[in-house]
Length: 233
Image (cartoon, rainbow, N blue to C red; front, side, top):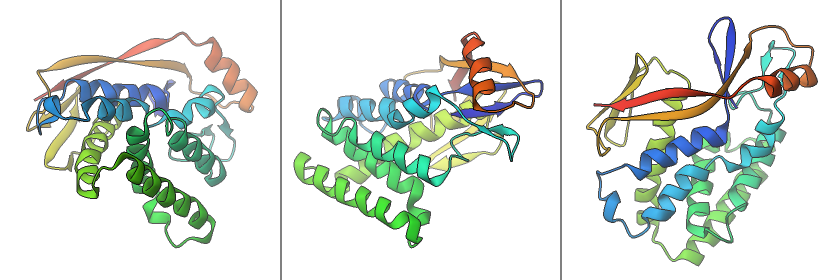
């Protein structure tokens, strides 16, 4: 879950909805040869489903009493995070093995700084073995996988910048970005044109919740809204 503090309210965007926005971005991507890419459909699918493992967790958000805030994608405890990514990397391994490969690559990128920590070793070894098996199954060379992963990595970053209203400029894979006044500004601009997107969200009062049930009840009663995001030059 992505939780953004708006002052009197907390705004919630689920990880799958953030990921769907990533897939929409890739659907409109016109640079770097993506429109004619042989694996374009799988790249868009990977963008849209890269956070599929969060479906179950985001359906029942938890309250962190110690922090006085909901548990979000940054503060999910290790056990829950590993369960989420084990689920998310295997859900589509049978039906979309190449997309699953890219999701496994993404999971490794997110957790690579844990390498060497005993409690993470088994999980990271699992990801490496899964990716190796999927790469052998799909027959795509490593340099092509690395080039394809850049699309997912960039779309994820752009979507996160919008959903978290990231104030700091960012740059990755040759693309510079800045969130400002309801829009993500990108240079060089990779999309077909300036575009407005709608990301589903809910808002609840920013108060102290008594626990998971209190938080879940408030969130269940909240109406669905739309976070409007523009992506421009």
